[in-house]
Length: 175
Image (cartoon, rainbow, N blue to C red):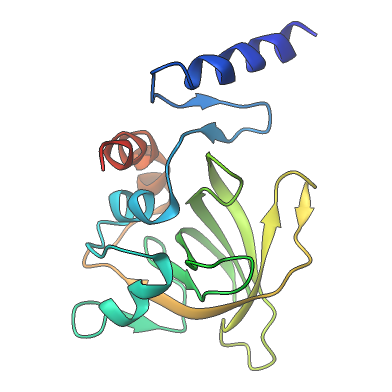
């Protein structure tokens, strides 16, 4: 019971003029920021605007691919549920059809690390994905259309992505 009160207190304080993140009971971090500034700060990919627009903006600036790579950014298309699309940084490649991502605002005002994403496309080309839904503690049932992955200029490891999250939150909060 004491832990629940502590979490509630931390969440309450997070909205009181302080923009520092606090870990929640599900392991995510409370942070009032959107996916695009966070993905930019974490990946080093210097694109801006709505998440879905990153794909077109990357043309001629960054490699676009259907193959995930750690440190790359998964770009989801606009949809009824995602009017601006969504971007998430690949933190680990688990297999041909499974990756882990670190992302902001998939759950409102939360930054979550190492959340599973699976490729459910018929052609095994990452054009349709399902994403972990933390409130349910399971894979979400909604299928999202994806453009693919944008590769940054620098290679990254899982450990480097994890270590960079606190700094990326601070940078994204300043934008």
